[in-house]
Length: 486
Image 1 (cartoon, rainbow, N blue to C red):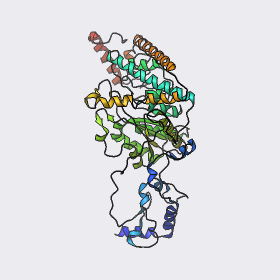
Image 2 (image 1 turned 90 degrees about the vertical axis):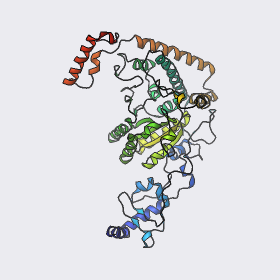
Image 3 (image 1 turned 30 degrees about the horizontal axis):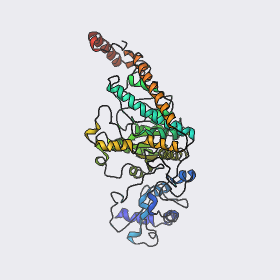
């Protein structure tokens, strides 16, 4: 009670009352449509950039007291503007670290969920036609065709490399089928200076940045031309040249790392941001929550892109979390967030384009939830028909195919034809088969490469391990691959 009386006394001093009053005067009420994260009333890209990722609540004057807190908290909508006129118990404010909190005599719990789900931003309908009144970033013919070529390339890579694994030519593979628009369109909206920290369904980003089909094949076959020297699992790509951090298998570890990268870019005053990807399953990891909070409190320029494809291997999203998907989790940590149709390349491109502006100009994080569907199995070690109906897979594969939808749009613009489609796919098939043959013929990395690239001078324990391995190979030569140099 002594502490409470003191806090009331502080709240009533002219200095504190004046500061709080400025905050209330500056606050403009939010209407019920503020959940929409993009402005549907204007088709200009200028309005789109200004409103798409804006906070639901706006202020008309500078707020002296905890400006940042007031802007980010939804609870402020319930602030009683009469709380500063009288001196009764329920009209005082708690002077608490982080900003004043108003009192209320009504016991009311915050709702566990919204009555309506957060809407999903899209530009193209299921037939690839632009929806009237859509706000989106204009895409030139050159960029659009490059995006489509990359999406088809990724689609064919998945098909042929998957078959190569089934033939026993590579040990493991994982496809991006049904999710081509997310990696390709997001990559197109970014700068080559932006640092990518991927999960394992983002080879499209690397493809967009210039990684060749041969380089992909070299990594999958783990030959000496592979930049990882065969020390990583297949599909764990990485390229220092393309600002693409090597993929690691553990889920979500890249998320807090991305915040650290972003903060360093901010400290160096670089005109770049960090971009990191994860699936819906990754949001159930502790690293996801640590990363969002870390990014929010440090105002780090990082874009979190979540591919919510409905399944974390065999776990449906309904079994992962009770909340409305992933987008609300950003709001909980004070991060601007948007939900986008992940099968709409134009919508993804526009959302990431605006998210990057926020990250670069405001030096703040952004969360993007892309709703999509994993058409393929989780990996070559999975059979998804054991836990989901085949007709559901076929529906998303045909009716909601992101590649087909984007093709319809470029065709409607007169930029593409059936002849060009046939030529592209024929050329890509030849390139892929040639790349596989070349990768198979290329010599593997030597045993010594297992122990290099970490220490300038290998420590004693590594030298002992190498000696033991060579002795084992010498003792059991029949168990050692004949195509790997000793």
